[in-house]
Length: 98
Image 1 (spheres, rainbow, N blue to C red):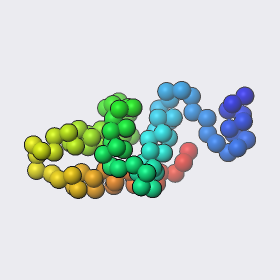
Image 2 (tube, rainbow, N blue to C red):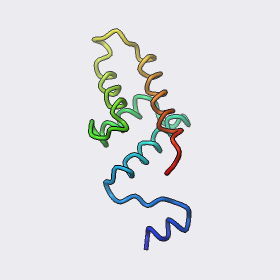
Image 3 (cartoon, helix red, strand yellow):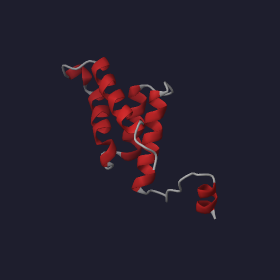
């Protein structure tokens, strides 16, 4: 019943824990970052917390979340990591909705 109702509204039904559903949620979070609703750090934290290193689509974002944790020991700045996170969010957020 729910899939039919969503289809009628032009929305996609994703089964619980499906990769397609996880990717759609990650893209929605990316669009929130691009809209200024999340900081780059908060965005990577949420992605990492929800999907760990298991979702290939968000692999670089989880690595960037790890980078935030070790910035004081490396040669990158917060601004550099933020810029890369934002670029990844653009890549995800502009992907056509399926």
